Amino acid sequence: MNVLVKVKSNAKQVKVEKTGQNCLVVWVKTRPIEGKANQEVIKTLAEYFDVPQSAVNLVKGRTSKEKLFSIST
Image (cartoon, rainbow, N blue to C red; front, side, top):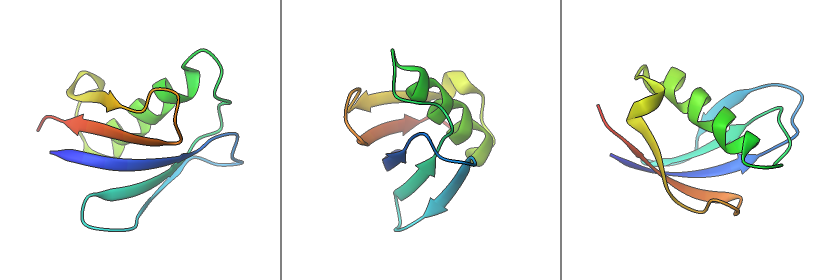
């Protein structure tokens, strides 16, 4: 399944909000330095979909706020 994610980095808390059928907004505490925010988004999505982190892959948008993730279930 592909999921479009809008990332809000440097947030006060970590949370996920569904905005559409395959669209999410993810808030993470980490700042977007050296891919650390991407790693936290992967961890958060893995917990949200109850899959291992290895099942969540960043497909597009490594340096963008809008990212496309592939989730293997």
